[in-house]
Image (tube, rainbow, N blue to C red; front, side, top):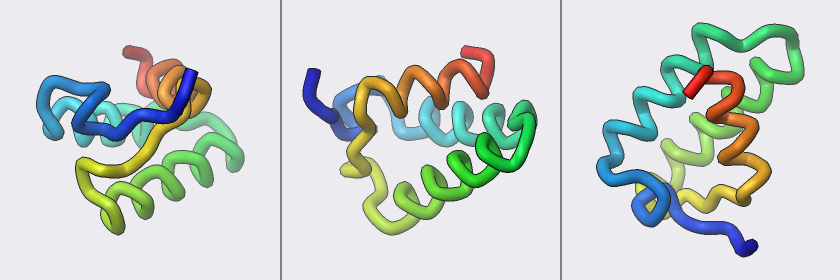
Length: 66
């Protein structure tokens, strides 16, 4: 499956920002913390047009416990 934008994957951008915040709280270890930091930086740079691969989305939701 191809990468999709945040605006394609989530009903509202706020849903994605809440997921990022939850993932920051639940990140366990340096790899997860770096992954979330990179996701936040990409989102800051590209906004709702940030691309997420299916694997990135799954990992982010696992970390954020969604």
